[in-house]
Length: 247
Length: 219
Ligand code: HEM
Ligand code: SF4
Ligand code: FES
Image (cartoon, rainbow over all chains, first blue to last red; front, side, top):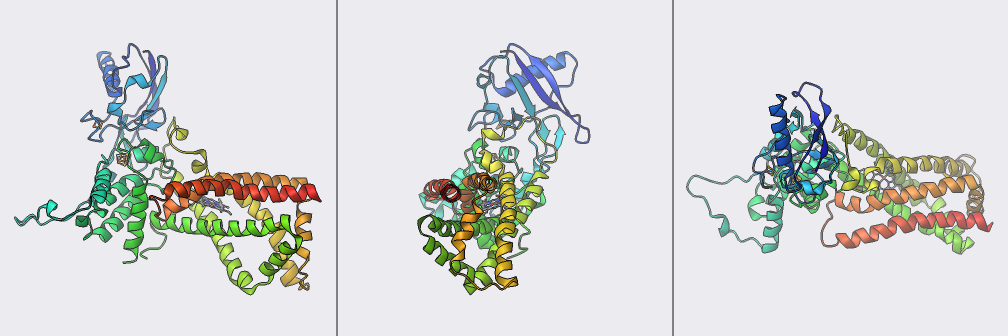
């Protein structure tokens, strides 16, 4: 396949960026999207140019590090996959592909396609945990019975890999899907009840402080989420928040 | 409640509550207007009741005005906040791939409804207030039907009416189910609620359009 890549290049956080065109030829449909970018970077390096910086780590859809807005969609046109799991067979010979960083004030660009998603870490640190006694008297988690239905829903919420596609997809750059998954995974378990009030209040406060937008229920996040995190989690977080507000 | 309307979720819930109130008002308004198609007397009776009942006039009317104003002011605030949460825009943004047109353009459908409401205010509410509370005209319980029919004589006004209600339909196609999600209702009843919302969003505005066309062509 022969393609034209239109890639966002930006030297550093304080420099203005722009779209640069890169023609690329002999792309195999079996390559992953990141492998295609590896090939491009090898060509750039051999020509003595700066390679395109992009985030990646596990390359098997579990770490949430890879990002990229591809033709106007986070992780590209495929569903239920991260960019590392996206294959070039989703594109046609002759296609033009826009590749941009995830955009949100709360995700500032560091360089080229790499954005700083530490705002997610700070939301998580504000309450996305349970406190346990680790002094040697730790109670086995399995000693507290949990009904299967709740355990399954909690597990589903816990599969969020913190990739940020929900924010990137949302027209409001809202982080509600991510935050609600991190609230829900504990809200559904007895272990999460002790700190439930503080958790949701603090995490939502941090989410707002980071400058993410308001949710307007467009549902774009749910469609683009590689892990199929459901909007039900946002409704649950709203209930948790209302409950906590009255305390 | 700590810091009312200071948090994104509180704003979202307040927005939804004002919207749910407007949904109920809209249904009530439709049911009364629809009687004009069936019986002149019934329509006059109901309008007379609404126009003179102290609870409706002194309590519900101010609540309605507050809800409408709150809803659109909050709508503007949220839109401005949300726009500014992504200062650097995408060069290529494919919103249609993952969300409906209606959900992305609530502010535009809302603006058309607002324009209509301003018109409706000048057209109906101000003359009504003038008639009742400034000129102190004696109440004539049979005047309402004639006034309504008169309103729908002008094809221009009927045209504006049709366009506004078409946009109200688009507003509600997203808004109805969205308001339930906002207040935290999403579970096993959601598919049924969404289906009901679709019927509501299409049939109620269509009903208003029908009433306008009915009187336009029948008198
Ligand atoms: C009878 C008139 C109206 C009705 C029945 C109505 C109904 C609704 C409903 C049900 C929602 C969904 C709320 C939610 O998602 O929680 C909504 C949202 C919205 N409405 Fe209206 N609306 C009306 C008039 C207006 C007007 C005049 C504007 C003026 C600009 C407006 C602007 C908006 C906006 C921007 C939203 C999205 C806000 C958000 O989801 O956060 N609406 N409306
Ligand atoms: S909710 Fe989905 S899209 Fe958002 S960060 Fe988690 S895995 Fe990524
Ligand atoms: S690189 Fe780990 S999810 Fe894509």
